[in-house]
Length: 289
Image (cartoon, rainbow, N blue to C red; front, side, top):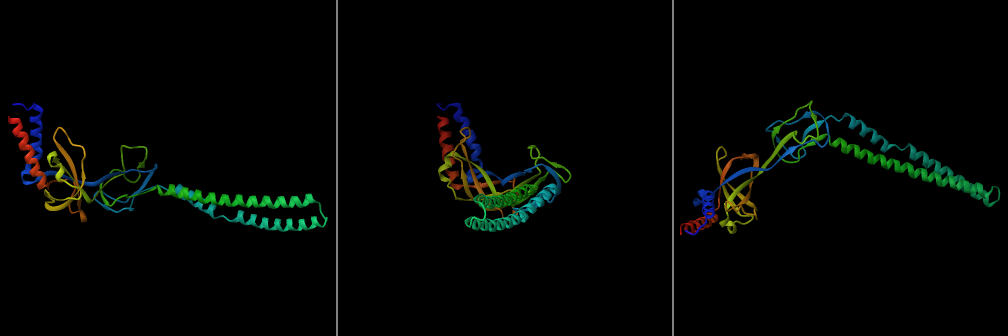
């Protein structure tokens, strides 16, 4: 017998993975496409929670509202400042008056009725008024930017759903304080299940028989028993040397959320089963010599 003990262990693990692969079926698990935790972007008192556990949510739907009285008042004040025209109008009128004054002074200076210094002072007043008008317009622009900033702060007080999915857990209620510094306790947990991920472990001997985009039949266990067609989306490039396996992810369309996530299943890979049997037979034969 010339096979090391580790070869025998690897063969046993491989056979356990192959399992029902004599029928081309491999154990798999159906999981949500993504599971996310909803956390606040800012600190605040929760005033409304609009969803319950098990509710279906859509992208952009309002989930939670934080108290925003101060932010709304600040936004209203900033909006008013951004729309104020008094300072601009007064400076425009002053420029018009000083332009006429400077023109008259220039005419009088040419006819030697006033000194050149008086003419220059009028021209300087006109230029100064133009600078004041520019400053007033800059302040109005700055007020507009301040209004945009306060509106962004106000937007953070409303938490919306980033995905189409379902609420899997609700952890906070109105009256509680949402703290963006507390990483231990999210507000809600969501799962996207309109497309599911099917995770499968296959024997490394069947690596070349699996291709991206390949259609695979998935047999689900009860209570969602049925036959479905999934598509290969991910093929791991790193093998598990101890078990001689590699991971494959399938995408399974789930319109209407008919298939629950978290159920076990069987994935049918006929070509992989044949290659796995050949590899298992060769390893078993080598171990018995």
